[in-house]
Image 1 (cartoon, rainbow, N blue to C red):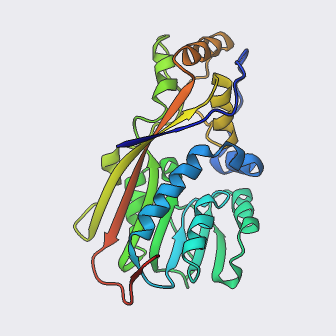
Image 2 (cartoon, one colour):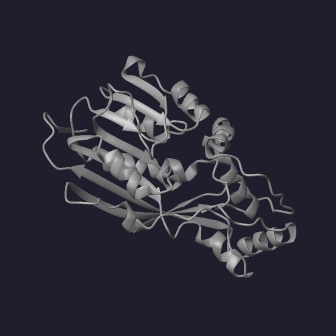
Length: 283
């Protein structure tokens, strides 16, 4: 497992915290859409590596691509530069994120944009089979990533590829450790185990590897702003908010340990058994 370190962009110290009522996921992502890419250092690095994984796959010259959780289009833009003849179905649950992606892309009539829950995919009737289904940094929000991936894989053509990048257990360990040092439990979402991202049966060939990305936050406030900036500040269901004093103590412990946060990312690729006609590798 390789490690990449990303620089800090904020060095301010937290002095107080405030609990807010939890909003539905799509509302949090909508609120973050306009400024998302200012906080998406890790997301860009992960998308670069997922792109490299995808371009090593044998795909048709004009692949039919379904993207799940496109966000502002970070992965979409990178893929579009490589797969210039692709036919696109681009989806996200958050309308404002989807609109940001639409505005950033110039794909003409080769792309359709749809608001869709990727865990329970219902693409338009004309778009029911895909040569490539991809997703970067989105499936951790599924209630059951394994079942969600299986539903997506059902939409692959013979020889088609499902390629995802997902934060897994072992991510944000520094923030969780700051809580544990004070006898507290972090309210951040639980990440899936890597084993949950493997195919359910032998209808698929698979490959999975892990990379670790270290985000040098600069401060606890930098980390919290990063979470809010990418729409990932929702607490774990059933968790209780910290008091102002407890949050100050956690922030101090986090900064004493270096004010950095690591992402452990699994890159999981499934290929449906069978040959896809006229396949090629992207140059």
